[in-house]
Image (cartoon, rainbow, N blue to C red; front, top):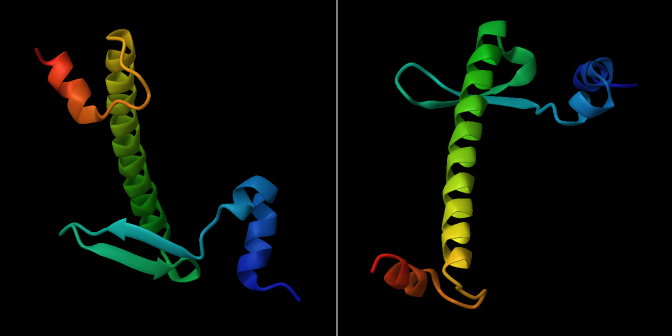
Length: 94
């Protein structure tokens, strides 16, 4: 017999259901991290978790973009794959 969570996963479909976590994580208005079992969460807490994940996704995107810019700068200056970032920075900031 399926659990309630497994039934919810099935209702959402294979892709969304397999990525549904059993616990929500969000930040409260004081910046504290809250972990709450999904089946005990309110719909507002689901919205807070969406906002938290969106902010995390944006931060990941910014860090990835910064690394891509660093990589492009280094390759444009002829740096090699074995060069350290310190050596690249020394050369690029002259």
